[in-house]
Length: 584
Image 1 (cartoon, rainbow, N blue to C red):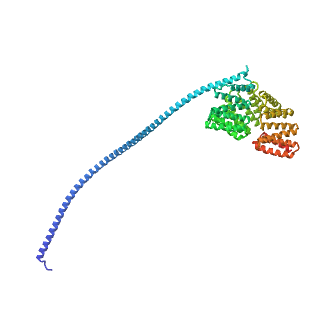
Image 2 (image 1 turned 90 degrees about the vertical axis):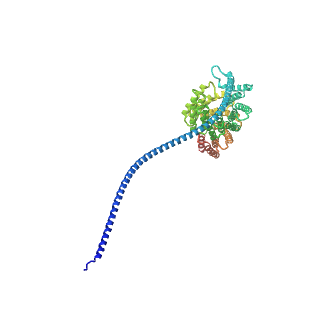
């Protein structure tokens, strides 16, 4: 191998040296860079430490700020709550203020209204004071008027007053007639109202004493005078119209009573559209009229309405008891004895509460109660009540009195139902004798007494005594009632019965025919009384041998009584008994 060349060695050495120097330079440079990087790293670490310190300080400050912020939030929440409370309180105060303003406004309105009311009340008070003054003046005038009326009536009764007892009731009609004469002579001419009051009182007494004709004349006089004094609606005029209607009902002039009853009711409704005594009285007249016409359901409705007005306005008044009595009387006629008994018991309770001891109203209620009990078959209870009523009437009325006579008559009827015919005959005779002493001449109650006594005599087989009594009763009824009348027809039928028992069949047939024809004209659509008369006619026809006619008549009678008498009563029993006899 050839030896290296020196030039190449020197170059290679130079290259190596240069490379080394370059490497050293690079190392130095890198070393410097490292130093510089270390310095920068140290500085950076210092800055990092400073930054960390700042971060720590900032974190502390941030934590403090957060704490301060929490306190601020709490304070803000508290302030917010306080503000809300203040706002709520302000809202309440605002509402209270608004309410106060509204209340003040309303109070102002109320004060204005109160002022108007006060002015109105003052006006009303003045009117009431004037009305009270007028009422006082009217009361003084009424007191003076009633004093004059009382003095007038006492003067009228004075000549008839015995020393030891009250006026004998046999002279009451005479007293009333004397009072009428005094009025016609000019007494009380200066006071038309007092005169009308006296006339009405006298007429009522006469009406209750059986003097219907004279009573009607007086009631008519009062009505004529009232129409002259009052040209428009007035309570006095309405009362006068009602009284005139009631008088016509009592005399049997139902055609004349009807327009007056309607006029009284219409006027009462205009004067007192609500509950009032005036309206109740006018309705009561309608009940009496309907009852007299035989329209008992209509009569019951009117009577119940009148009684209900009194029960609402004055449940314990004597007028209430009077209207209840009317209701019971109509129920009795309808043979609705159970309801009549309840009403009469209430009537008696009211009257006993109003009157202590003996009183005519209590006696009248006992008589009605006894009559209903008799119809119900409660004969022992009826007998007890009628005996009490008779004792009370005798204690109330010295001497003869129509109420005593009626009590005797009713007790006699119960005795007859009990089969005590002899005692019944004795009481009927006493009652009839008293009625004949009280009522001179023809009288409805005397005629009724003659028929009742005749029937008792017939039951005792004393037809010879019964027939003359019925002769008198028929003549009296014909004198009292012009034309057809149910009581007249009944008297003919009773005489036909007596004559049948005496075997005077032709005379019995004649009387029965008269009764049947009269009742047919009175009740063309049929009635229980007419059915009994037809059944009696059938009995007579059968006895006289006309069997076919008898069967036709008895069938007619049965059909009629079953239609007319609901529920079945005494008339139905009589007709059915006669049917059995005729069919045999």
